[in-house]
Image (cartoon, rainbow, N blue to C red):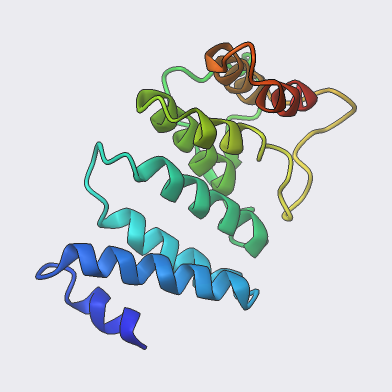
Length: 169
């Protein structure tokens, strides 16, 4: 496959490698090959320059792909964030898919990319690896805080984004 060759040549032609990785990931998603999609999204992200406005979308795609993948999507990762607002004694681990979605929101807001921030914030709870909400209208504190942070940045007249975010709270 062309993407494999472009990936191998990523140090020589990084832009072509990034485009090939994105295309391979999209093709894998259309074929319901979540593990392959995850691999290609992760590769695309790994060679995307820091600070690039494309990073939030790639982070979101990795998170969604991990969630669809199931077994890998449920792998825990350590919460190493200083801003984690989980109450003392709460579970300090989250699924890898959530970790990527949280980073997507952070970076999207840094770039004023409200559409991607909303898409990421409304992805909480949509995991195929198990519904992370533990009860009606209850959710992890960090997710609620991020959803609210995105909601604060959405224009008051953008009713669709506001409704989607409010539905997650």
